[in-house]
Length: 383
Image (cartoon, rainbow, N blue to C red; front, top):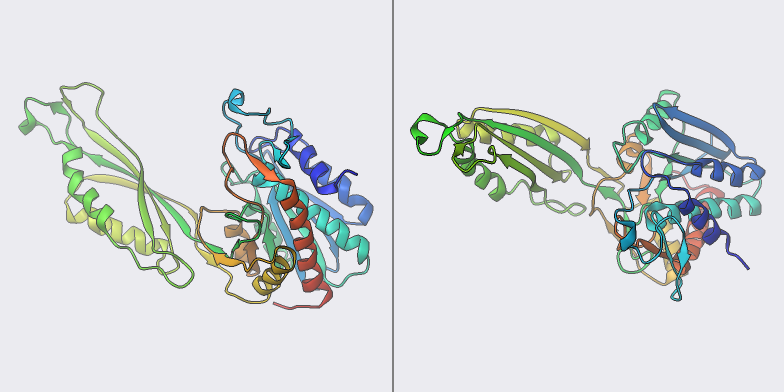
């Protein structure tokens, strides 16, 4: 007998929805949920398809399942053991395909959990909802952030949110993300004077000028973190200077560096400290910033406790709370003031060649999600 979550995951993988395209994935989900009486509100911003869907009373506690249908490119398809958009299950029960773990498997598990819950509880308390986008892996400018703005403008109620990102490390459910660090990128150009390497007194080498400042940037302890977040880190992502000729002193040096910062700092404080450091070395420079997301956190409480209990029941694991890893669309949903976590399959193969997910884990996730729904909504938990 075919398992619903496996079949839905395979159907989603077959759709080559490279970000920011959807390729019919959201319509597939609409078709699945329509017989259950869900209300659907497609939200298109620019060329990006988004979906807001719900079942139940909008005035009662609302639990949202959030996810994305877009995936990163497959890369060299000849390097895959199976074609990336032809879902294949191997002899070990691993389902291969681009998006299997990030995050079509998690999305399918959430849909199947909601199906089971509504079928068993057609008159359930509260509301179960979906917030789905096709713009998470790319620019993320016309996706969840725009949907959240629209929902907040009309004061839509959201009490709890589960993002189906692949949060597990070694075993399904061994950790859940209850927050994420902020991400702030600096784009710096240090200005010098181009010249001949044999006449350095007639030039001003920006690489030499910047070297002491870079050393201090790298050595700086920005904070020590706290009980939820590791210490803030700074990493140089790109650096470029020179014309390519061996006898020319460059006139400019371009440096891009990123901060993954804890709740001990704000982006304003980081900007101020970096500017002060650059000025200390009397550099001539241009500097611009890109804030991808501020840190957010859901302290231990109703949602984390209910989730931990559900994981324990179906896996016997005692889950850990974590804020590690990159950013997610949770940073936008957190603006609604809800309790939010990320819970999904293993993240070991995400964005890699031969991305895969355990079929057994997907079935377990359906049970976990469904129990969370039941224990939050039917038992009338409040934020």
